[in-house]
Image 1: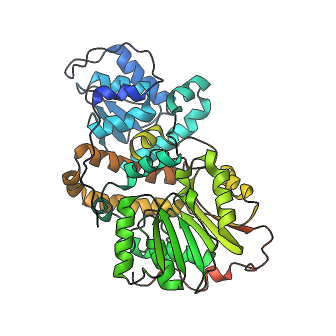
Image 2 (image 1 turned 60 degrees about the horizontal axis):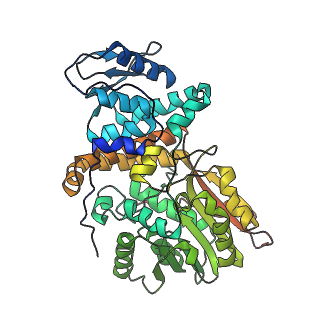
Image 3 (image 1 turned 90 degrees about the vertical axis):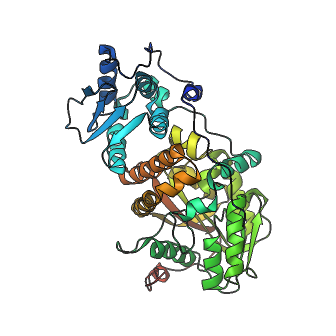
Length: 440
C-alpha cells in the first residue's frame, strides 16, 4: 500500500492577502504586538461584532485590552496577536478567520465547536440586514474548477494526505468519510457507519447476483459491504490513488476482490449498465455546472428497472462554500441546494422516490470524528505540522457547527427511470429490523 510522504506546507502570512481580491481599504498600522491599539482599531472590532450579529464573543488584543459586544454576554474570547491580524480579519473574516487560527495568530478561549455554532447562528441572522456590497465583499470567491484535469488535483489535495492520517480518526470498520446513521443515539461510530451502509443497501433494494456501479468510492467500504452482505458485483470508480490502494488491499484481505473491481478513473468515464447506481459523498465535488452531465451518465448506466441513490452534503438555498474551506481544505467543493440537486434527476428524466435529510446524523458523526482527532493531535502534528493540525481541527469543528446551526444539510435521494414500475409499495423494507449491528 502506497503512503504519502509529502508534508502539508504552512501558509506564509505575507501570502494571505493574495487570496483576498476583495479587501477593505483600511490604513494598516505597523504590526507591533506590544503597542496600544488605536481608537479606530477598537471601533473596527466593535463594528465587526455588530455586523456579525453580536455573537457572545469578546476580543482580546495584543496588549491585553478587550472589546466586548454591547448586546450579549461574552462566552468566548478571541485573542489577536498583532495589529495586522486585526486588519486581515476585518477585511475578509470569511477567509482570514481560518488562516489566522491555523497560523496561531488568532487564539480561542472556549469550546471550539460551540464557538463556531454561535458564530454561524449570529451571522445567519445578521446577514439578512447586510447591504449587498458587504455580502459580496465577505462572501464572494471563485471556486476551483471541477473539470476532468482539475478534479484530479482537487481530490489529491484533500484525500491523498496519507491513509494513516484518516485512520487516526475515522471508524475502524470501513473507513467511512461520510455521514453515519445513528438510528439510536448510543451507537458507536463503527456501528453507525455500518448502519449507514445497510440503510443505503436497503434503499437500493439490492439482491444477490446484481451489478452495482459506484461513483466515488472513498476507501471502498460501501463496495465491500455490498459484496459481502448482499452478494452483488461492484464496479467502484475513484481518482484518489491513496484511497484505491487501501480499498484494493482490504478487498484482497477480506477475499472479496472477485466481486469488486476498483477502477482508477473519473466518474465521467463509467461504462456499462447496472442494476444500481450509487454515489455517497461525491456530488459535492462534481460542480453544479456538471449536474446535467452527471444525470445523463446515471441514465445511461442504469438498467430499465435499476435504482439510483445519491448522498450529498447540501444547503437550504444556493450558496457558495465557505471561502476558507474551499481554498485551504476542500478545493472545488460545492454543496447543492435541494433544488440544484434535482437538476441531476431532471437531466435524466428520473422519478424521485425518496428524499431523506440526515443533517443531525452528520453533526453527530462530526462530533465523534472531532473527539478522535483531538485524541491523536500529537501524531497528526508529527505527520505534518502544527499549522496543519490547527487547520483540520477548525475544519472539523466548523463543519460540526454548520450542521448543528442548519447551514449545511445531508441529502440522501433515491430515484429511478420514470417508467419503472418494479418498485416497493412502501418503506417497510427499510425498517424490518435495525440497520446497525449489535457489535461492529
